[in-house]
Length: 382
Length: 129
Image 1 (cartoon, chains in turn blue, brown):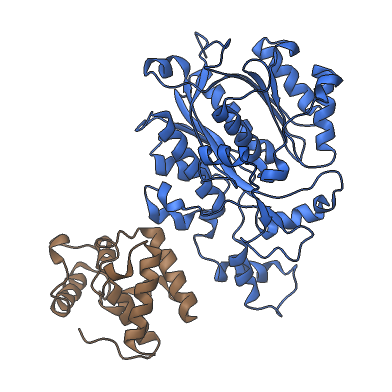
Image 2 (image 1 turned 135 degrees about the horizontal axis):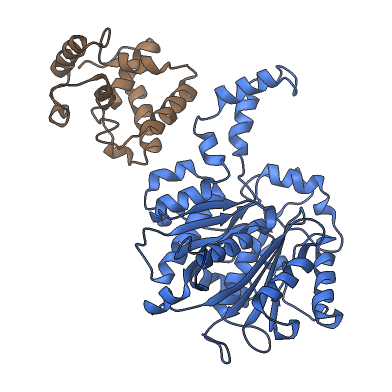
């Protein structure tokens, strides 16, 4: 229950992407025209219809882990999450805040494919694939007892909390590719309803493993003609604070989270954009910029363009816009948070002021829209 | 396979599992008190040893490398400890309570405990202590 409306602002940003191991390097390399896409090296993708990947390179997780022994209990997306959150907290200047909340959005773990393959491969000629007792026994005998601890869905949020000593509320959002932006939206709700005064929130994902590539192949994504599907990985996190508290400690304010909407089902982005505009008390003409979901999947792109047309008119929906997928691949649930982090860090909105709608869209149709206001720009309320 | 080879492998496994430099791990390193092992680390180390040597290690067996506590009674523990203290005078006994219980026994597990156990299971001569 809120007695007075609290506002949520972002005071710190951290990111690890295929273009850099921090947000500054990422922004600089993107502006410099570098490509984060190359042949996959994290696993042998030659058996799949797509072999390109947007990989994070030269990433040293150890630099971000206060307790380095815990690294053995993490998968790649968890390490990326810890790094991004650690950098977000550091850049905020908040530091040492015990009641810090954690909200991470992710589409899931890589399931440690090599370890599973080793466990199953010890007896390749025994039993049929549907022999569940035999399968179970081979998994029990052949995988490290810690395997489950690595792959549980909430492990990214858990490890962020351990490494940052964050003892506030903790949750994980798993609404497939929309999860990262949704986590940020949920964090703004926590701030506004008084659940927390500071939350580190964002998205972390790695699509670069056999299980993900199998799913992409089955869905025909490598064979799309309209737009290339290049799996990627990365993480972006934001330190979200109650605005009054942030101002009192003279924090640098990056942007305000003005409104948040999410929806499943077929109504998707049209519904969430309409709800976000309504909650923000903006008209469509008040929006200075639209950060599209830009999901590189035939059908989902058209869905977003149709929704934009209904909300903003077809002319605006068809305006040229920046699309980073060819340069940075598609890091699933981390995609929209990374795009947002880059926008906020560069402080640029094409044209007018700082009121931006940010979209995310999941393969299942989950839609998320945030209405944000970039702060510190001419004409913006700070 | 020699005991020296087993010791080298065990140190490599323990160091990796506990995120320590191999040079900082020795035979008399207590896994808990010197190397910071927690309960899940024991699960990890046992699995890695089982995989490395293609054996199964029942949890209770890991004790039998260096100490015999018989039926686990206070007197059995006292006698087993007296035997162990004679064998390992350099061990940091001052870190352990004067009257030890079964719950304290895990702190006695050293790298040497594991090496001696493997040497016996793999029919190799254990190190003289």
